[in-house]
Length: 326
Image (cartoon, rainbow, N blue to C red; front, side):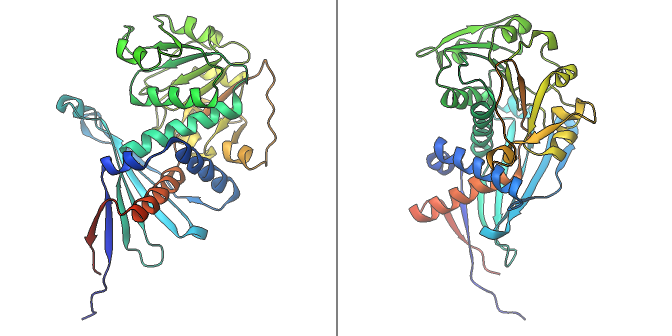
């Protein structure tokens, strides 16, 4: 019988994760993930995304960064019935694995990681593709992801002074307004097209149940960040908009399978954001250009953030260490 080898597994619960997450560091990790993806330094393995009973969706995003010894996956999805329990519908768990042995090294509550890395991705999209003189923002959705998207957009574009929001039921959300009202003019818009027409940056952070506004409402010079489409059949944009816009994605294959790009014509040109960040694709927007960033979420984002959390937790002695002999 083979003798057991000693080993440990570090567990990082939600409280530890939130303590360690820092917006600037998450943004740096997401930028790193995109650059690695573009340069071939990190791999994204085939995506699992399947519907479950009662409207739930389960997915696995996985990949590795061979040069850094990073391997792992995120198991995540959406369980709408959690709301009846007064619990978060989105759930995620991240596992880091030692690529040399296949043994798990760190188990991480992935809820806050997913929220913040998606917000950071949207912020990078706004930084790269929106007009530098943008002052007016419109967001569809008032949930956690909508809030974080707005926060990162404001970090990316400090010139933003007006925030319009469109809620799912057409009613105002005073609690959402209070998050930003101290430093910005915040208003609810019952008319989606009017809100889009009056905005320089449009963020869509909804369950992706259908087109949220008409293509004609989008004015020249507008940038759109779309994060709600992450499953086959989901959509937030009117498809005809792609004919007028310059399109950027996090991953071409994934965006075509589960993102907004699944609704575009097969010949629609699109560029991965990592190529722009790495300097492989020059980008200089004109004042009249419409840009779209279709963000479906990459395993490499989760892995770069998870690796930084594991390192910080180990340095600080945070989390629960469990004997895990093998």
